Length: 93
Ligand SMILES: [Cu+2]
Image (cartoon, rainbow, N blue to C red; front, side, top):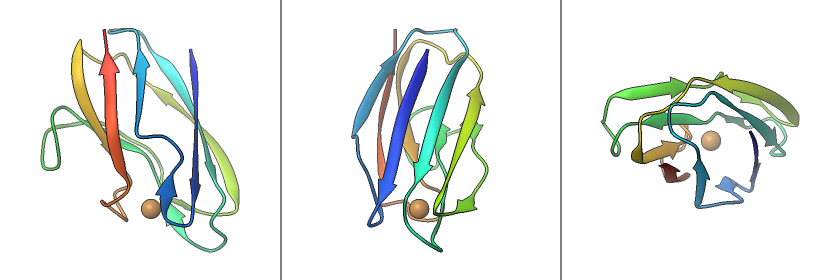
């Protein structure tokens, strides 16, 4: 499964996405903010939860594909570690 996430103007273009639990997937992360570093990191519950995945931080404009390991069933949390106001929910079921 492939999820595409765009970052533009210090915002993600989606607030949540759903994936099958315990199944590796890919995130195509399109950072369109020139000269601005972003990433996508996933935590088990919310900010300060255990890290499940940490994508490389990189400056735009650039697209990087992350290989993400399978996540346990449940609702998790994703954010940009550089800008924690960029965040949303990952639903694994
Ligand atoms: Cu960011």
